[in-house]
Image (cartoon, rainbow, N blue to C red; front, top):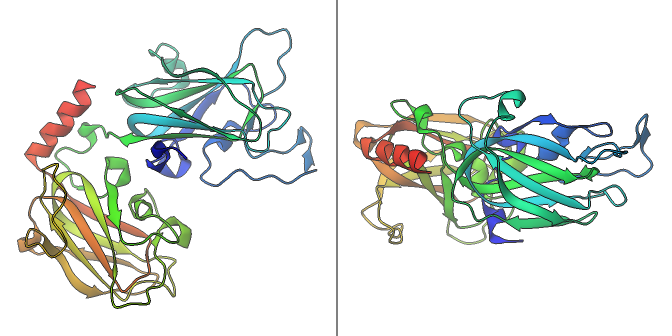
Amino acid sequence: MSDFTTLPDLALRTNRAGVIAASDESFEERENLIHPWAPRFSPETFGPKGQEYDGWETRRRRNDPGNDWAIIRLGMSGIIRGIVIDTAWFKGNYPPFISVEATRVAGYPSPAQLDSAEWVDIVPRSAVGGDAKHEFPVSDENIYTHVRLNIHPDGGVARIRVHGEVAPDPTLLTGLTVDLAALEHGARAVACSNMFYSAPDNMLAPGLARNQAEGWETGRRRDDGNDWAVIRLAAQGVPELIEIDTTNLLFNAPAEVRVRAIDHWSDEPLPDAESDAWFDLLPTTPVQPDTPHRFRLTSEAKRPATHIRLDIYPDGGIARLRLLGSLTPASEQALNSHWGAI
């Protein structure tokens, strides 16, 4: 897979996205396009509309020169780096061509209001095949809030993935207590010791983890070390409360955790874990399985930070990691500048 597929999926249902309109969904519903799981298929499962598919499928166009389309409201606004169009299981009913447009509209526009928006081609009309994933890199530095998938002329698409860099609306963050470690606010895991079962970005996802797979879980250690993850915060902020959630991790939660922070604006590599530049937010603390833990920080820990390091002892899984706090004036200015300049 291309490098862009490691970036968050801005159009994932579990990242708060929605399919708000479609030209047609005679055979299969538009909402299927953004499900988090891989497309499923059971042969010879016929409903009143024919073979059932886990995707979006439109009728066959007759004497109609147009094309079908679906509009996706991104769950996280951002700079789109690549699109994946997956036609899994659509072998005789896939569209021969697709294209993708994008727009940025403030607030919560209706489909009718989006008709008058300025749409930009980010993936030109391109050929696709059946039962395959198609990757399309995007070279566009603008921030977008919606995309429109066009299929030419009709057919079925299982999934659309919109990978990119989150760029949050600063008006929803400035002057408030927010989750500085939220994926939807632009935080990312930038390093970790192990992601055998799942990736550390999962800890930062919106909502509650429904099962073990929706958190971060490492393999079992057979040495004297411990696992860890480093998170780049959404912006420089002053943390006030940490939440460590081990929900669903009944027999594989860590025994203890530790959280440290660093204020590192530089593009230079982060200092190693033993550097005095790192300071404790939460000293080594026991945690329980299947439990959300909340820890108010001491006044000494409430200092500006740009990154945190979560150490788990010795290994295991964390469902969610939250870091509530406020942005610094410098980071508020930087976010406003970024949002307004693009």
